[in-house]
Amino acid sequence: TDGSALGNPGPGGYGIILMKDHHCKEVSQGFRLTTNNRMELLSVIVALEMLKHPGSSVTIFSDSKYVVDSVEKGWVFGWVKKDFKGKKLVLYFYPKDSTPGCTVEAGEFRDQIDAFNQANTLVVGVSRDNLRSHENFRQKLGLPFELVADTEEKLCAIFDVIKMKNMYGKQVRGVDRSTFLFDSKGVLKKEWRGIKVTGHVAEVLAAANALN
Image 1 (cartoon, rainbow, N blue to C red):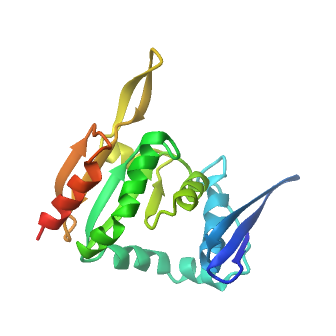
Image 2: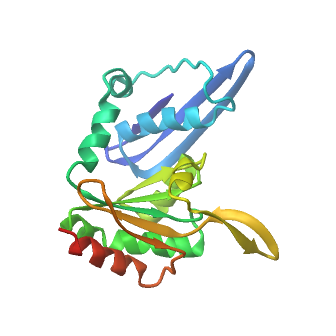
């Protein structure tokens, strides 16, 4: 795997070569604005997501000391603890990247991100899309917050947001648009389920500001 960015931040991308027995596959993607470290890490994450047999033994080759240290020295666990420690959290579930309602909702969270920061509140979006889809969605809208790729529906199951929906006369499984607000100690304080996008972000922000 490899990744880089010109200007750092600037335009960049990543490249991946997957090899098994006599088979080889190459994958790459570029972004208008990114960083060296983000591309180095993203290349490894995307490569692992592409594996068809989770849990199998894999050897990763990377020339990035940042990638190696983040795993071998356990930095990734420290990043998670540092990012969430002492902050309130808005965890919002949405059906699918780049669809009309989800685009509007993400855009409204983006436009209010300074207000959420002032309320000491992190915003994190969750859907079943993969990481590559999320990166495209973030780049297209300029989203300043993280999106979780819950491709195996683990978070969706914990928060019970998978529901049967009627689509074109057929019953299909889908994500029920939902938002959860946690206080700075990680305690769930409020939840919204089956929501309508209009006015929702403003309501969540008001609730975050109301928390001590």
